[in-house]
Length: 544
Image 1 (tube, one colour):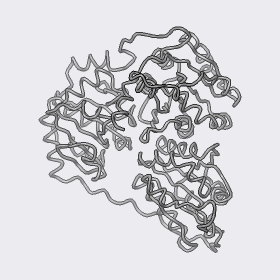
Image 2: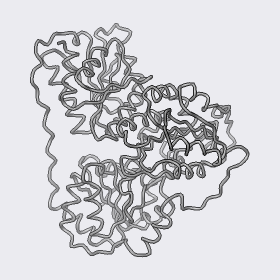
Image 3: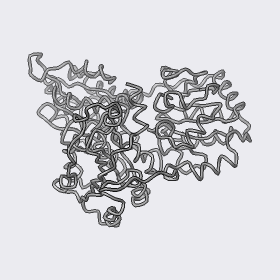
Image 4: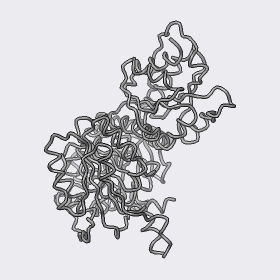
């Protein structure tokens, strides 16, 4: 066994069961070794797609995933997806072949690339330490929630390893228990608050977190909201406000901005989640709970922070409270939530007509037509709020939002990774026309894998965000407008069932496809109205 084979085998033995990538000469041996050891390998059509598939798989499965790429250009092709995963603290190991000679055309500073985007660079330097290095990479990804770029130099890969040494996975570092002073401050704040709101983020998606937060909220009378990446966490709870921030419904925004205490649970409380602070009343007390001490107060000023695991802190805080506080949970608020918290219950002027469908009416109809057990993946663009707001999801593993880096073109690959992680649910990919064309090669991956996926393309024949941002000032928009594209024809060429929708009445084929046998994936080429700007992307432009 050589180093490449030993590394691949060790990774699988220590829990890496799913690998995505594009195989070239430099990563051929390590990829095959992982497959031989029992991992499932998914070949993407582009390394950027493979990286995002791995990211989404890890998020929706709750486990570590791997990406395998060729030296130099394979890694650079994958960098946007790797950057998104790194910013989102996704546990991911990137196996990157590395050129030996600095004079090689494939030579780039791969460690510097990893560092530049927030990933952790590591390198296998020899046969004696290869397996141990691989296990440190897995441990770092799993225990610290990091993307690790594990570089495998070509000359080292071929070194013989006479016997694969037994190496043990580094243990998880102990999380310091929450201090008594911090717990007392938190309990006092919860006890005295009249209108508390919990906002749960990525750090609250772990086992037991929902139950712990709901029990604490019951004791202190708090309403429950999430950041976008944790959408669905409190689905079904009568006190859930759904998503806070740009996607918040008018009632959710009203209730959050009326809070006198906001507690962020594993949530950065950044400008997206808090609308640049406009959702926080001037006199509101803001508290943050996070396992990472560096995250406390990093995005905004807080009254105080509590360093600790979300579930553990919530359980400990509940034990400090006697319960029985009404807080924000009045009969009037409960009735308002029941009647007005969902976006589909907010009246709107349907602008469908002239061969174009209003994306709100389109998405509301799809919410009714598609099975409730779904996992929704959303690309970036002017359209992105409609699927995010109008498509309900069953829990926190029903919405995969790869938008930390705000790159368009990741949505389809996100849906592929999510579909593989959750085969029990229907995967729904919501794309704009720009992102769909960027990622079109991965339509072949969907068809080849036989994934019963629904792809919805919101086609406004433009980069709509720029149209609506710069158009009112009279700017020349010829650089961001395009002819209409026949996405249905493109999809059929890849093996999809596909049709074009210019009105809600055109959606009848969806019900037929859902009824079965779903022999081919389905693409809906939705020609949407083009005169509606998105307020959620105005937030993005403010953050540039």
